[in-house]
Image (cartoon, rainbow, N blue to C red; front, side, top):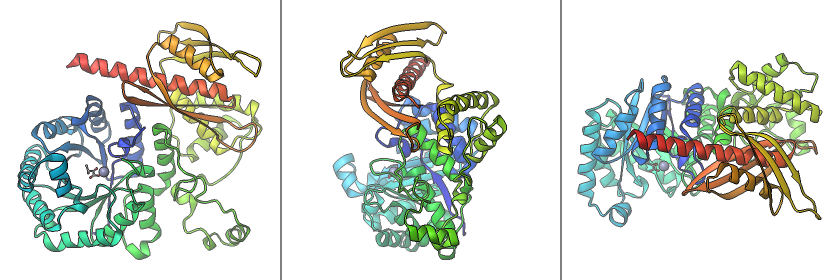
Length: 512
Ligand code: KIV
Ligand code: ZN
């Protein structure tokens, strides 16, 4: 088989990244994008871990029809049953069971013997198979487990009905040579391995997740588990875009293909960054802002003569917009809509109209509107169109001889106008105090960052904040040419998410 199955776990392992928290609607939006991208499997979540996860796996299972929808499960009857409940509405459901296989985990964390692990794994795979045909099993911490024991586990779970066996480098410890040898060893020593798909799942603690995954593919693995932008637990998972583009760009070396429409990579990357609140480092391979920028004169000269001199991939092949055509206040709706389509946005009529309105307002303040400006204002439109509380009016007074004061007017979910004013240590503090007084939900600001979207003094400023309430983190974003307004929008965005999540939790509690 010369095709590599792309198993995307952005919504599960990706969301385990500290500070990432996605609600069910956002997970569905990402799942839609992943479907467009052409991933084969979407791991939608871990139903036994929380009612919220159960809910979002069920939603994705109901709505997304093309890829396999996978639910992760502990190796227990209760968790397997929950995974099945959550995923059974999918057109192509999968249950993915994991159990630690290394002695380090078995003795120090779980206090279980190898035999108990083996028996439990076999039983739970058989239980899952009684519900559905597609069952994956992961011996967790496989790269630190004893290979002979690993072979026994794999043989047993395949006999019990596992259709995919996944070898994880859970703590990102393996080197490419070791990991490739492990896969080769499995192929040579597990007698029934040909009856299952051999998968790998690598973490990036030593920056080797992509290299390890590619080495495993060379050694015969045919499913790779990865995430968009490489987000995930600790240092993250193998990055989907890097694996896919390595296989594509070096087809001469690997001789393997994927089902991914690579021109959709850029949009997927932007969406995941926007919704998780994790910015992409400029030098990030494939999707970083500098990935296709040539700074040195020699390189620029080469690229102008023939792109191949210093460019191994065409930026268009990953969906980076072809033209840097700049729009201005004279640009009409038609040109704006075309630009949106080129940037990969699929918006309804109402969102397009609202975004165009925002574009016109921005064009009055800013002479040239670039792609990054458009992305920023459309993301802002998509964010705020779902919000319960809206910012109606904001006024601040501050300066080195002033007491910073903010006056704010919000519109609540019932359309009522709520106004208040407060003093603060600075204008942002004053605004946040007013919001907290109006909304009345205790929370703590844990992160506040501001950056400009483009160069130039008239640039849009984007504010990203995180707030914490009852141990849960909520991200908020806001954009405006006025950074105080952007800060206010970011806070109201985070508060809206907090309120929506608490309302959802209450609704689920009452339904139980
Ligand atoms: O890293 C890991 O081992 C995992 C498993 C649960 C697949 O995420
Ligand atoms: Zn993992």
